[in-house]
Image (cartoon, helix red, strand yellow):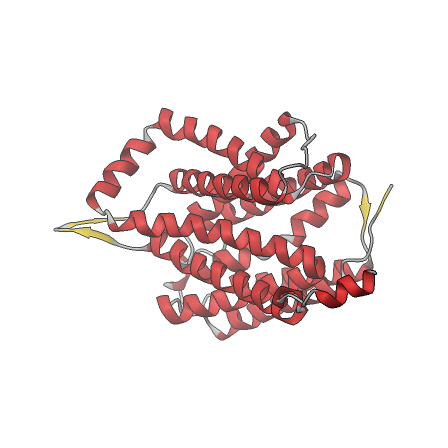
Length: 329
């Protein structure tokens, strides 16, 4: 009887795993590639009105809008696919997690005022470093030797990327590690804390990705909303958009590509596992750097290219060999 039922039902096009992988890969790649272009356009663009030349300095408002769009998107996904699944995660955990999540995003966006986009992408690609350090110190995890070697490769790549030889006294004015790099370090550390909090929620409450996305973004919207109201940044931002209305379209698209990209990442994890997802996201980051060089003229030295290749080689090897089961003691 089961055979008869199965025979009478034609296979769906979505049942083809190759097609499903292509959709997931293109979804992640296109969303985050465009996300990167929009982020650089918004935060590093020159805004000119008559003789007045301005820079975008409203990172907190930008992140707040991004959180609102992500929360709405997550709510729609829950209503469509997880309506019957209750969420038992304690609210205060979402609140704490949102603080580190917020700090990481604001620091990352603010860093673009001081460093170019390839540096920001490369810096954010070093997430395994704080995740491993915090895993060892806070969660008492033990990692395989391959993990440490991969992280060493990533650190070496970053060191090469940031290294600027002093050819003359004029070059000495260039910073090797300045405020932009410090913001990226803060962002990475907070990313690591967010990862630890999310691991705790998944381990103790089996929190789904969509519920996590919804509640963390709701808490983040509440916190940031209060901050931009009390600091007056919201009114300055509205005045800025009044002078340059074309930025509104870019900001809305920026939030939408971020939310859609997160959905495709979740689909990739569910259908093909975290290893495939890591490889897909690592590949797209490399091409994001390439796109920034081509579209925005961010020139990179040969040593920076070597450093970039080392970082992504380390990330690729980590995805393949560094994900062995970690034991907690």
